[in-house]
Length: 211
Ligand code: HEM
Image (cartoon, rainbow, N blue to C red; front, side, top):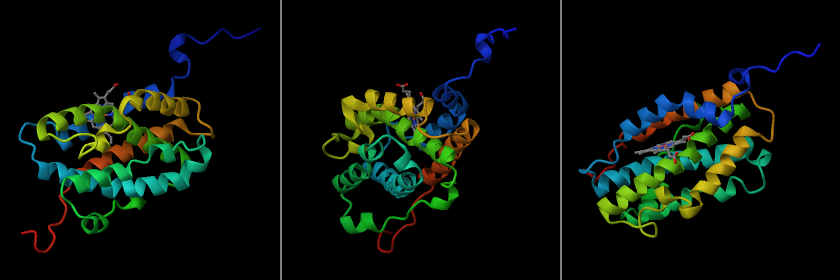
């Protein structure tokens, strides 16, 4: 006899929805740690945050590429490289190329790159940040008078393409092109949120001569 269909609640949940639910708290935490959209925000505070993002993105880009780049659809990661945007923003904020090259990098070994599922979890976090980035970009534009062409490229990310790119990312998560362990993807996403919260909120060491 055929077994009855499982009730709706027992059918497997889409990984993208599970990620959203199970990282909700981590997202709230990173948003509050950043405390970015506040009227007192100065250009210098914004530039310091971009510096921290730079130190993370630089490491993420290389590590994610090595871990899962070749398993994803062609050019999936190369089309999403946002390091040049951060660099342009930092230059627009008055940093020199030498200062940017000397920025400290996020310690890559904090995240587990050997586990492909966990690496996929980092992709969810970084790509998802383009959604909130739209709100951040709007605020920075209004508040600091910057534009996507001058100072706010990173948070503007793919402009009108943000929605399309996010749907592509969700498709990769929901029908992964390689075998995954869903629990590990979620664990990878939570670890990324948590380490990134700490990294973005810790102040950069003051360089000699900066006072
Ligand atoms: C002030 C900072 C932030 C604000 C105001 C913000 C706001 C938002 C909002 C409104 C959404 C939902 C957008 C939509 O569904 O269209 C969203 C989604 C998301 N954000 Fe943020 N965000 C912020 C920072 C970040 C950061 C720093 C990260 C990660 C590094 C991040 C990761 C995500 C992710 C992964 C999603 C997708 C959630 C889903 O699965 O639907 N956000 N954010």
